[in-house]
Length: 189
Image 1 (cartoon, rainbow, N blue to C red):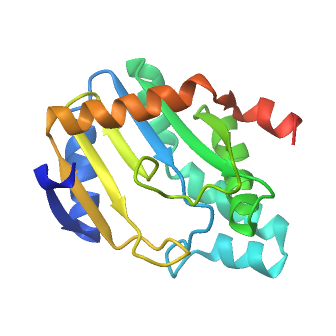
Image 2: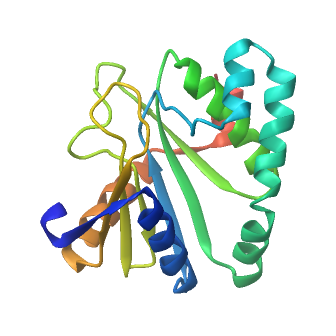
């Protein structure tokens, strides 16, 4: 799949996101698979969570989410499909505890978050399950988090290849059939 793609550094990945978002007409889908991830060095919310200061982490995450409020309003105004699909292995990693705190805030702001429970023996990410973004059926951005056990984004790949995008769309569609809404997942956890 990556043979029909362009490798991007982190800055170019961000620019490609902005360009793809500006062309979006119907939907945006996001798949997240990593069970351990390192937010940017400057992530005060993750540092607070790791210190056990959950209230400070929650307050900082709320502030971070507020920066995306206009995006959520645009999604609502334009009636775009917008969904984040999150693969979860239990017991939850510390990172996923932090991420669920963020998801609660973002779901309250209108983000649709769907959770798929996965076999804990599965080593995520794998060849079929990795982090990517789909913009309609015209663009896919595939994240590169390096080779370690903890993801730290170094850039990624951009593709407009119809076959690659169809494959990614098939993967996320299949996962969504077994997904539950975030609120349902939280009640049953």
